[in-house]
Image (cartoon, rainbow, N blue to C red; front, side, top):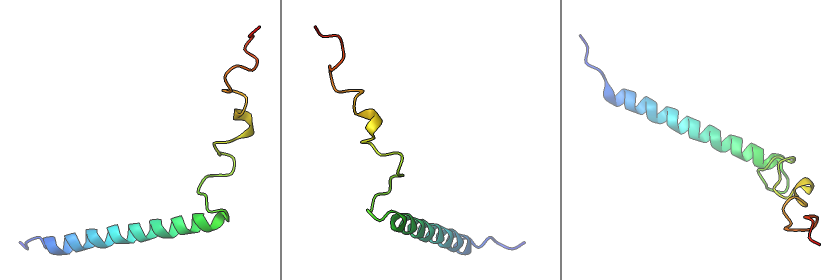
Length: 65
């Protein structure tokens, strides 16, 4: 019976990890080039959306007489 080659298995795991990391970096660069202003946020999911402006201003139409 042959003995397991742990060094080979470790090298294969390292290569797979390196390949996955490089793929993530390529995807990140592609996403960044899709947005000319450099933001990674989708266009409809910004934090300063116009619909959020009046919901928490602190007392405009709260019935303060």
